[in-house]
Image (cartoon, rainbow, N blue to C red; front, side):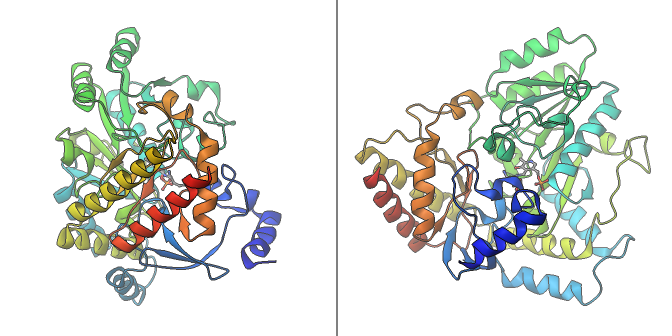
Length: 425
Ligand code: KE4
């Protein structure tokens, strides 16, 4: 028996499903999940010494590739001073100043420990600031495992076929209005029909948890206008897109500035982190200044701050976005070309270092389109790639990531594998 199988058998006895996050269980693609013992650059090394070109990049944080020496050095320097103080620390100030400098919507910021905490706290703050309780989210968007947002959610919830999680009281879910993405009329109608008013819209500006979906022209601008007209808070969940699609995220790329932004992943350099920020008048409603409570033992943890500050400084210095766009475009166009040669219905939306694979005859504009894709094709492709050294996300409802450690040779090897796989379809 191989190491991963042995580890998985042990894990399943004491960890539900053998994993600490459901999507890692390979339920959507079958087989036994591999265990990783090391990661370096664009590669993962499994417990059975298989080397894999990694297009998951730990679900987004590893934009510089794994084990970048600058981040490793920053963490080891911080480690020498201790692991957690429970008091304010200098790196937290540096991180806050960087985020205010980089993210257009952020006048003030609060650190937390995950993307889930960031979105959960953002909607609580929006409710406290507006005095209203309803929230609009969009089908297929995933904002972490926040009770009131696990309604028609994407990512692992969708992968496992339960976008509406058990355990969410009806009283919570009824405060959440779920609408189709890319449909401004539906948003306008929701506001006009709401008697008590709506506190906020929370949106992944480029949804990336039901595959990757791009906004219609004017859609994000439309959400901005509707929120202004209805005094609702516009929250961009840029946990995934932040610092990845441009230094300032989608809001910098499109010029649409939300009132608040939820962040995570890249700003922790691979360590546990989350952050939420926005207009000072909203953020000042947070304790200890204001009436909205939010807290965290390890918020602003010195190791996570050291890794995150190093990751952001590296981005500012290297500005890898043109290179990532070029690699992403090369891969997406190459895959589409191969699929066409074998008459395989495949859409490959790509923006910067993010792309996904919808086995679908038509372009995908929303959740309903996404779930109409042929997921059995994805499963065959995933298994072929994994057996030959390429690791795609283990779900058709995730997005693939390219890091700045990926090189042309990785792209060409990947295209060769796709060609082999599609030939065998
Ligand atoms: P975390 O709580 O997992 O740090 O962040 C939640 C979250 C919030 N918002 C967006 C847009 C996200 O994509 C996420 C988490 N992303 C998933 C991958 N699709 C994390 C992977 C997992 O759940 O294991």
